[in-house]
Figure 1 (cartoon, rainbow, N blue to C red):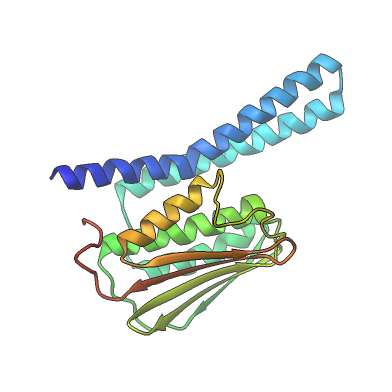
Figure 2: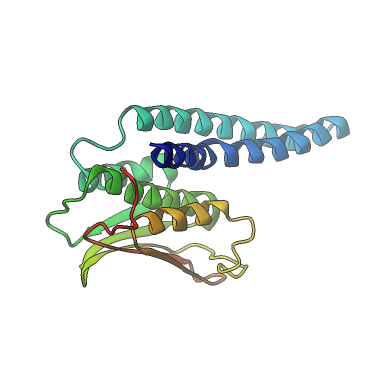
Length: 214
């Protein structure tokens, strides 16, 4: 019970980071710039920073509602495939990025606890596409690979200028890798400036003894 409670608290911390902490950090930075613009009497800059904060607040409110829904109902009752398809269908309207879902798995039968981990890895990877990649198109691929499953998220964005292996400041990537570890799998990230980003998740079909606590 203690282990389950610790895992639950860690998961809640991860979700709060993904849903709120990043947005609050961004707004704090923008508020500082807004203060400077007002002090300098620069109305054009002030309006821009106000608009940035307003948009971030709207997004934070939406993600908070999603977080509340998540803790009320851990997974789409129709399963992971339906959740991914539904996310794909609304992605362009919500983000301005065209997302293609290439599903090569006819049936996916995973315990709900594992589906939740996979879904939120994909969700974080796609959130990074929206926040950082400056991409126009992205592709989500799911297929059976050896004794497990492989999920790849690719985009045509600007890529990452820093070495992804260092992950300096990329707490979201660390959370994704932690989730992958709970699945008994691994997560790799390949990126180069101007060449987009590719996130690959592989996890075994069968839950291992070192897997997550459900």
